Length: 73
Image (cartoon, rainbow, N blue to C red; front, side, top):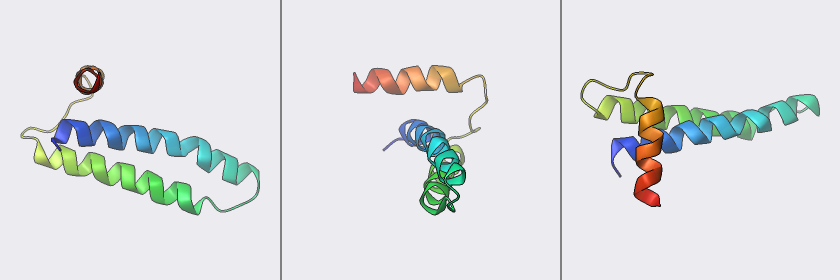
């Protein structure tokens, strides 16, 4: 997989782990699985950032999401 796809996948994995964390905290549980998933998403983004020359800027992320979504559609 190319770094762009891995970055976007990691971004969405990390974002979708947040509701699971909130749900676990509100139920009085420790969000173990959600924390592992968030770390996995962050690691995917860090790996993709290290593989692309110059990395990613915050301005590029919306265009990157559209570009990756366009590849799959």
